[in-house]
Image (tube, rainbow, N blue to C red):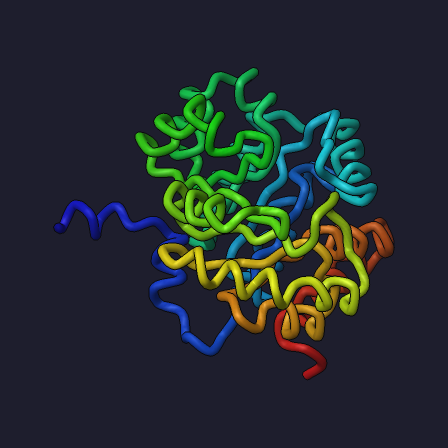
Length: 273
């Protein structure tokens, strides 16, 4: 029993100890965007302004599931010279100052190129808590899942509106940390709240029926506090990625760009206070 308690991840602890009426905010940032020097500062600033989970994107040259915003940030980060080892160094730097749960999110190719076991070992040593690999679904996840488990990394799977009920149950069974609920079918990107809200209610109702073991975070299409309140009403929290990248893109490299981004993050979490 003590062994199980000792192995509870930062992600699991966060959900266990949260106030039930408060929504968890997870933010996605592409490592090395808008420059190599800013990633650590951004993550620490996100936490100070209300983020409770950080998803760090591992740039890849062919990000098929991502819309233009994340594709753009991937390309900029690659041009900036981002590497997997630099990402691990960034996580190690964050860990010197923060215990915020950190998830690496990206495609399986860079992981396999690094070596799945070596990748998971290095991730654990750096202070990573979990992995989201959208193009390694349950059927193909054995190439990473055993190594992830050995190195105490939560492996988070996704459900979408076109997931069958049985698929949702299967994802719930295999996920640890939480289940990522993709609110709309298609690529990532900020959409109109109304567009998402129309389809999301029925989807989330199904999710809550069939995903019962794990907490649930909803993402794709959230760009404001109001969107988050509507879309995440019946789940444990929400994820923002494209709208955050857009916020950086709008102001970088103006003098106050970081402060403006942090203000946007605070507004996402708390609204206009």
